[in-house]
Length: 225
Image (cartoon, rainbow, N blue to C red):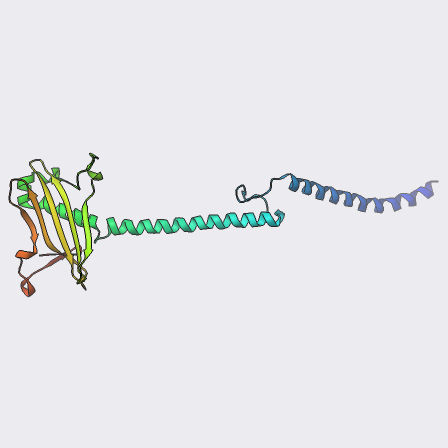
């Protein structure tokens, strides 16, 4: 009997191994299928990217592609808006030809002008602001300015604002002209009106000589007479 049982055991072992391997493979596939069936469906609104691409159905792949396209579009829109805001901020504030730059230069000249200081007071206490509004903060008062182009192609920049000092208050008017074909603005007039006192001209092109006898000094893109 012992000699008969030994060959029987040797023949059973090779047959059992493929059966066990097949059962293990079937169990693994069944568990993965169960896990895939238990997860929620991927949509453009709940896709977090954790589900691998090869496990997605055709509809779920389309949902992920839609979500990624939408996100990419948002990035492009953000870049365009940032570039636009930066451009307009530079043109209105940081550019040497911006209205803010001309306003700051005009205020600096007023604070250095002897006649203005005699009537307004200490330059450190002189403040400038735009038109009066309901807001008490000076920074919230807009500077009145216009930029137009006439029939000859000349650009006209006009500003109107106010100055306040320890002694008096005044109104300021500035008119700059950029001739057609020229790169720089020139002063047409620049004066300060203080109630009860004669008008103070810091620039007045009408009283200046014309032609070759007229000398100009260029600074920050502005030609001073």
